[in-house]
Length: 254
Image (tube, rainbow, N blue to C red; front, top):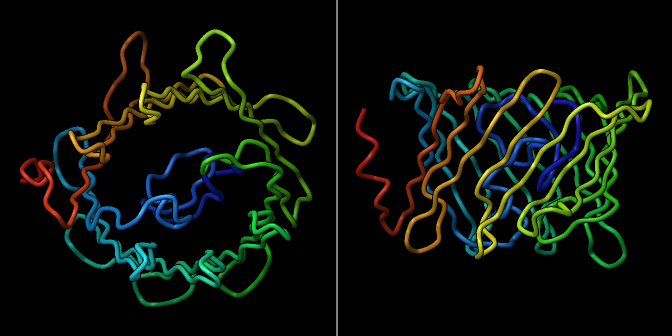
């Protein structure tokens, strides 16, 4: 993970982690307050249908995400993430290992108008790793930003623009510090504005993320695929369970 990108930012080490740049995360909206009370459980299955990972989510009284707890394929703890808020906005995020050791943390900074302007990533011992400067954000999608890596002093930037050929498509272009295009991500939306697919083009690698929604409009599951030849091969599928009961619960038997 090298760049700021969709919805909010920074690649961290957990397999299921909010604010993942260049890699869409459905949980970002519950941290930003764009939606309330999301799924209570997320179950990840591989292409053979076997459970490989599980996350459990907790929320505060206003519906914002406060904790993510992770478990491996055997149900053993694999750490957790905690979210902290000030004046209704996320101010800090901490990632802990299974033995409760702090692995990474993020701090969020806002402009005079309350808009998110910077996110800083730190190691578990407090060393600054990188800073992401946000130039613009629209409905939870960061549309223009740059990431500065403190040690190497390298900079990566990206912009999100409408596709001139398709009104329901947004294109994200990612550049390195030499202004060289390193990756592209294409986002496709349905008529209701729901994200349907993400196509990631990086070098010779082509990856696809497909999303499915239930009749209530909630995200029900999403899958990841890699292209080999002319075929998209399934890698894994994430299934979501909501506290009020969801049809997806009937699909989770291993």
